[in-house]
Amino acid sequence: MQVAIASGKGGTGKTTVATNLAWVAAADNRTVAYLDCDVEEPNGHLFLKPTFLHEQPITKPIPVVDLGRCAHCGLCAQTCRYGAIACVGQQTLVFPELCHSCGGCVLVCPEQAIREVPKPIGRLRVGTAGRVKFVDGVLHVGEAMSPPAIRAVKASSPDADLTILDCPPGTSCPVIESVRGCDLLILVTEPTPFGLHDLKLAVEMARVLGLKFGVVINRANAGDHAVWDYCRRQRIRILAEIADDRVVAVAYSRGEMAADSVPHVAERMRGLLETIQAGAHV
Image (cartoon, rainbow, N blue to C red; front, side):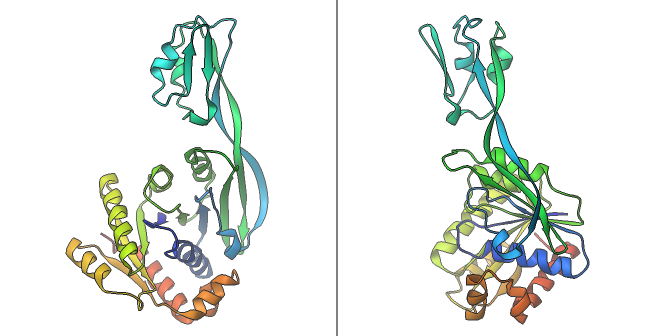
């Protein structure tokens, strides 16, 4: 089963839920894989502290034009929806930072003057954290597009009974790439106006994608009741509530697993795990 942990905004406790859920599931003798898909700012390793067994570059294919064969017909530029290739007079220019690696320019070139070469965009890391199988990706600084790196992380997922995908914040392309194909989407939110605003965006995304989803409310005893009212009106299942506790914040600041030191967090994670396995979600 693949469970994606996402949030409309950053700072809601998404990684806290993802790492602690993986840790508790592994402690319960389940085979667990944790995939950190937040390749622009991965931080799951700070808490799970994996031993990396393998690293390799992440690449994406970029077109290269053979100017000796190119007739400068412009078909490649007409095909590219992203402006990554352009014909200017007797020159055909490629802009790698705009390329989505779709391969369309290669297919339409009548002179077969375009080929693709791999461009390194990041690093893939695979290891273990106790009983948890660990995979993350680290996007190179300056790279504009993270979905190819996210796909590489997901493609390297080891076999496991439960695979947890720690997604980037927001609702844009990196998040959609991360949650694509998951069996359940868990949206982590907080009871604040900002948290509710972005939860609504995340719910809309989940419904457009046709995903089964539920909500975890973090810092549940701090804030107003608007999030609960919204979930009730929208008939969204609240899968778990985690209390706002200074001890959790201290554990987080030290890079420690809250489930190891805070009993109510471990209890909530075990309850969430049971709910997931029982299939009790919207």
